[in-house]
Length: 422
Ligand SMILES: *Cc1c(COP(=O)(O)O)cnc(C)c1O
Image (cartoon, rainbow, N blue to C red; front, side):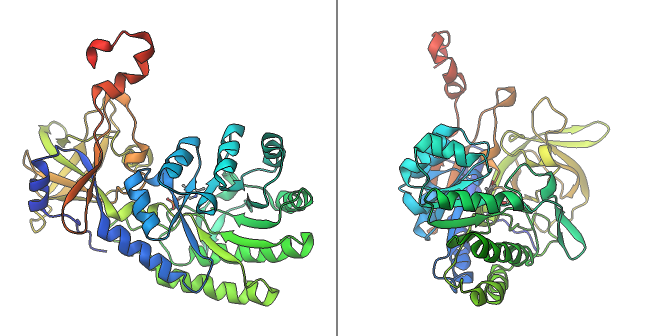
């Protein structure tokens, strides 16, 4: 897939008059169109809802934009719940899919009327002790163990993952929850991450639908929704083919009609908790070349670093880079593109063939819209950047300001030492 930035050099020069680099930029038009396409893909299922995984891009402007497109939110922590509440999400618009959950977070989620998705069998007791009751609507997270394969390719390794209940546990859990008053059940599983294939959801759906039929038969529980969670990926590399969400929706529909409908379960709603797919391609990290260095290798130092985008340093993840204004130049220079952390893994690209880079060039680092800014941190005293939204009318709105040193020192406020730094 050709990797083309959603922003032009002229637009970046205009933005620079108000906002210095580095910053994350999001594409409102792309976000909306993609969200609408997802809706269309599952329009055959009247109860369908996407619960946007807040951890991917926890920004209230983005969350409200998705709310406009009919999305709910998937939260996994207290602050994500608080943020969602502030954005106007409530009740069944909120899925609380957390793990190793602090009891007070169960209490907060229940107070919001969120749907609680239990990660573990022992959480039943924890939840009941915390709330004093079991909610009427409840979900359980499933982990079948083993490896998740598509044909002969191992996609991921659920047997090694900390999440979810075993098959035996989920049967027991449904029975116990039902005895304690639960009336509407959900089943959730997240078995492979960043899949770039149209087969993941349909294969996962088959496993969960077959499980649902057995759970209903054995426990008599009313299954009201099945949550396919996240994991539909994006083509970070130019040689990858993007997923076709319409084909994915049709694939799930086929399995639904094959497994659920004949079992008299044609009223089950499908839920998703996509993060990467909703936002990944519609965000980029904009940075400028500020140094070049010629030692044993050729380095370009940019004004962003791994605190702004951790994926390359953490996973060795590939993020495509466009040198703005030089799209048609030959890629005849081999560079490491680095940030300024005192960590040798602070590199956005290693041995990457790119056009000749001059100081002051804008570099657009692609596909940072999900798990980009949100994985940021403050190592080396580095500050988090601003987030900007490129609106459909071409204007730009700041949706999060950049951190200042005062933010960095704010957690010392209690001792008065740093007042003069504010
Ligand atoms: C991270 C996460 C998601 C989103 O995953 P993506 O790969 O971004 O789609 C959804 N649900 C849960 C429970 C998660 O932890």
